[in-house]
Image 1 (cartoon, one colour):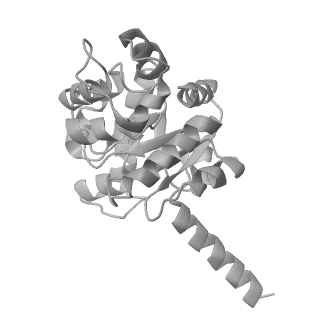
Image 2 (cartoon, one colour; image 1 turned 135 degrees about the vertical axis):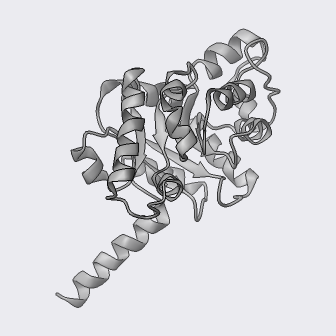
Length: 252
């Protein structure tokens, strides 16, 4: 699983790492677009839209063949959705609404083979390994797999330190919109309540020697010291850029 190893090395370097979260539309060519744009990773979102699984598997396959990190966000932090997401062949997962150590252990069961977990592998994800020996799964997939647990509720926030410290966690992640709603400050990005919560998540990661995945304006996040950045949703980014080009043309 070379793409996961590559992403881990970039995260460990402390340099800026950028990517996008494809929610509204996904087609395999988007992997090439992200790679050619100079991004470091792409996450295909299965939480909000059920993109065709064959199309998603093809996107993961392109990532594997070209050495570009393609991750998935499964619909839920539950055993079966996570296990099925792994079968599509990503090099990592952004797991939504993780609230406890128990949830982290459940994720571990879904992504690790026995005796460390309960995964039953199959499908396109099997292409990561040259044989099906346990040691091959462990060294090629499990030891390199990227796991990003998203903190999106007060309960998750209260348990952020133990979630970040879990051996499975590569980097802790924030879900700022859903978190703001749960905190009673929905879509108030500058609210002190939300900003304090995000700081707590970041500090929880740092306490375990791990960075924090954060979505938002890349320039602003970099100025705040973030290094693991999601620039947004590709279609939303396209719409924003087209609006800028339209204004420039009309005011030239």
